[in-house]
Length: 138
Length: 257
Image (tube, rainbow over all chains, first blue to last red):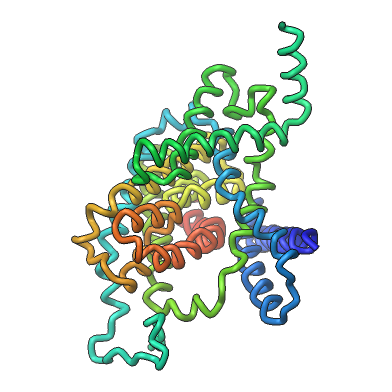
């Protein structure tokens, strides 16, 4: 049933936000600390487990897939309710923050790509080879 | 005539959330059409839609003098509910569904390193810019730093920490600038950063993190690379939502509190 999927999703969110609130109390900030991220981790673990156990029917999955596919429209609505007028006063800050992050990250691409490489270690391709990424971590 | 319009306005206002679904759907449709016809797919439809949302929020702010963007128009109050923290977080958490743990392992150490470096570097740049523009309290610095990660991490962090709507809007704008730059700039820098194989695409996705930016940028560079970049990029927002309002905020507060 579709509601099972929606319910699992809701459970992950409540549990994540609850843990985030507890974490906030524990470190003494009046804030939810990482609640959404914790909920996403729970979602990954739970959906992996349920799927491997064959406990999640395709119909139930739809209850989650719907919300995941409506994510961009929700973000559009979120953008449409912001106080943009106030943000524009700080316009250069937004542009500088965004552009600066992009430039530094572009520059890091070749560096980190090289870190992944192990020149002494000839590509030990696993039998299948399809994915080509079957290399063990050092 | 005014009677009919009043009745319509009343129906729209009374069914706010449903009105918002219809309205946002229309916005997204127009944006994807614009993306296809005018930019010939160079700029992703989602980025245009979000940009359009911000423009309309500006119009709403100017017209109504409020702080809630379009949601200050009574007939569009539902946009505030649809785009509010509750439904937004619900949808974001749903995107984690289908991420396979085995795929994380397969992506390897380079991808993990790129994710951590990507979130940290963007955060530091954003927080430093915030500080230099006078947003020097830890909550604002953290929120803007998170916004430099992605336009999702920013508002999620801002909401969690209780940042002002102004700073949250700024963090979305920063994330949006990043997303658009990644989308449009990638084909031009690809040659110089060695972005021509799956491994560097994985690393690139983890460093940039903006899913729409990465998908659009790689599609314009080499469509074969899209799934590799998109796969690591999907972890980025979750990681950012996990790190920014927690460890990073505590660090910023310790340094600048």
